Picture 1 (tube, rainbow, N blue to C red):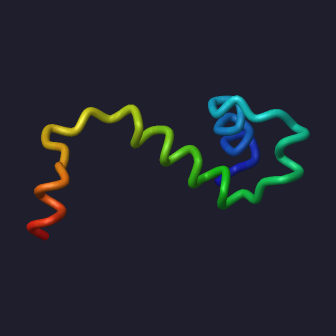
Picture 2: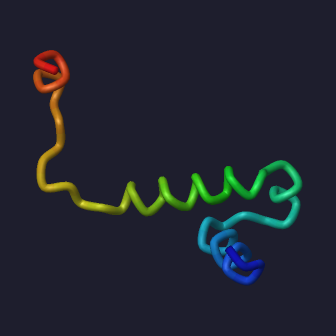
Length: 54
């Protein structure tokens, strides 16, 4: 990952430069991935019954 791409991800997440002192690059990457996962519309979402059967 390049520095400009990393900074773009930080802006997309709404992170300030002060917050970057508290976060690692890996944590920012994880936050970005999770934010994209939250926006995805899954065709089937598991219910408690599905977990119980698992």
